[in-house]
Figure 1 (cartoon, one colour):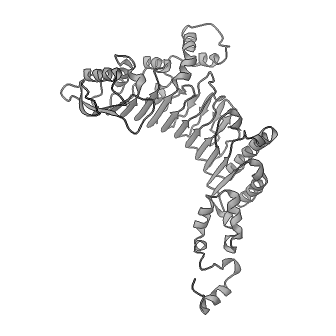
Figure 2: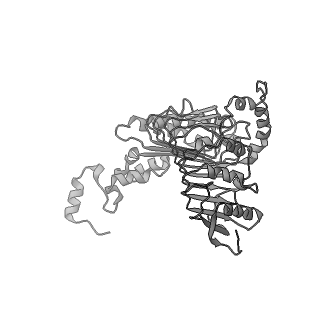
Figure 3: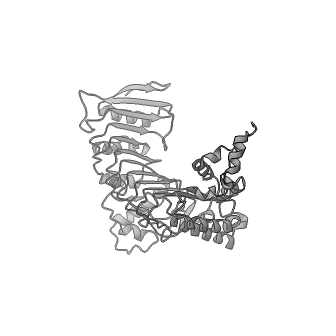
Length: 440
């Protein structure tokens, strides 16, 4: 480093002690960047930077994002309690925009019993505190979920109450109330629920929510569905392996939706359930789980009605289900649907009746994709593309339909049946990417 000149020594000596900056410390010349860098550190590490230099002494107080993390709650409890009191006392000078609370699971040996319950109590208290700091984004992450013991037990009411919160992301949470009512957060627009336990949840409701993501959750095979009532929703993603098909209420502003159903869980219980409901039994529905279903209005769709306003729709199931077959009896008109992705369940029968029903109820459909797999993959061994014959378009399909894609990993009888059905609609093959030769 170049030696200081006399002029530079004089100017540094005349400066107040807190403003003296080492010429090699360029970060300190940019206080906003300092605070932004510290916002990515766990709170205890951010506070430790106060010993680096006088110019760093109070930078941690001005971070706009607070990360609370550690191996266990016990080791950081006292520090976090004191930190939150300091931050809440200085909100006028240093408001918080976001907070993340991240810990390892509660089921480790040292966290059993009272220690585990104390840890959950502390985290729930911190959630209330950071919400009082007027944050707009909150992320809770209790990682490595393997059993009910490792979830963070959280009550939605009155815990989740904030006039400022717009985004909420939850991972590893078990909700202990039946209704996840988010009306206490009137500005909330984005909600993500990942790898959580929905065993007790019967209803999710919000008047402000625009984006809802529920993925990789479980319900311990609970014999009930979750009623989703979010009338202002624009984007919906339901992708779970162990959660019953939800009951979707009307979503008139919906634009995009992806719904993947665990049909094993549905078929495990709903075959008996549908028989019970359709039999017009005089029973009071006292058997576990059936009473709630019997009180639902089963003269309308369970899923499709709520998705009817979507412009882009992905429906995935690993096989045909009672729910989809039943919904098709009251299939609504998808008056805005432009792109549609379906998989095996829609053409399980040789006549592809389910697919035919969907096509008949999509009058402005422009693109159809059918898959022979349970998930949307990046690559397929067989890809067939076709277009409707312009001179002889079938009256069964949208006059706006421009392209049909069929994607799979092998040529089998199911594929040939589907291609035959598409051929009956005057949809002609234009391109095939495969080692085999296909014929309509």
